[in-house]
Image 1 (cartoon, rainbow, N blue to C red):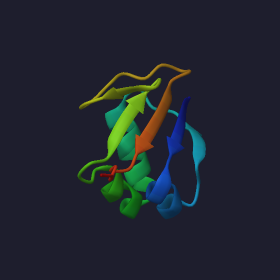
Image 2: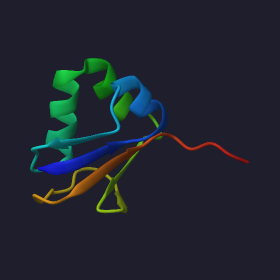
Image 3: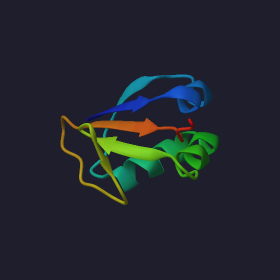
Image 4: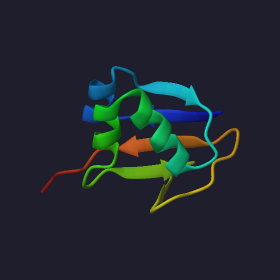
Length: 79
């Protein structure tokens, strides 16, 4: 099971910060989360949201292992 972490407004929207979820890929994980909570699913697919697998930012889909850590990072702002 992947360890899933949400940060900032994504955490607030979901009402949780960390969960264990079975998924073979980032795509499958997003689909699982979206089926459980459509509003969260839409937010995770929003502009600027990044995904890190085992502390490395990935683009697109990525395979997950049984001990993977997946973090969904909200859009960053700053100056």
